[in-house]
Image 1 (cartoon, rainbow, N blue to C red):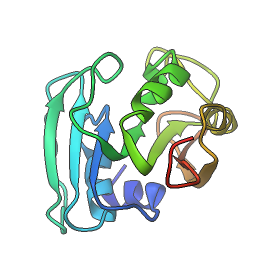
Image 2: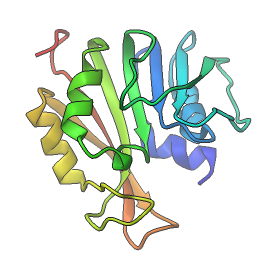
Image 3: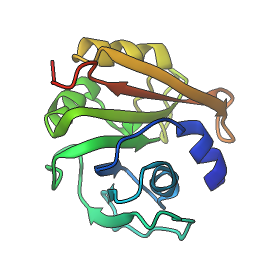
Image 4: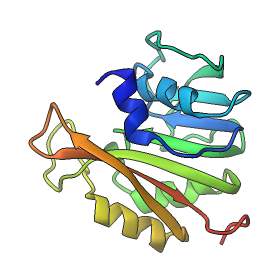
Length: 175
């Protein structure tokens, strides 16, 4: 996937502030988010492996901080405006537990952006898949009242597609 494709998939209205890209890999979606956030934002590029970001366009010169951390077990270093997980939630068995725990670090009005494969078929690369409707229901069950479908695209790796959603507390205060 190219940077423009990633940007198009997660395109939305996002608030400036501190964000975390969990399971950032080479940073494709880190830079996609950097291109979509208002100037002056900071993104923690978090991965369990040592973070080695590929160079992509960052026209707003957002501050990107590489951070080696197991986000399933560890605590993120700051309160956050948002959390991005692009193709990383499918590695988490207890999705509800992770969402509830990390949502405590979201500022009022904070949000999640999730990119996943729309499949229920597990494999070694997608051990705990979640379909779009199931993920939307999971966010409703964990207290989010504003869940939006951002887009979808074919996957080069799977017969199905990829989807992106965002979830945000409806009011400025957490439920």
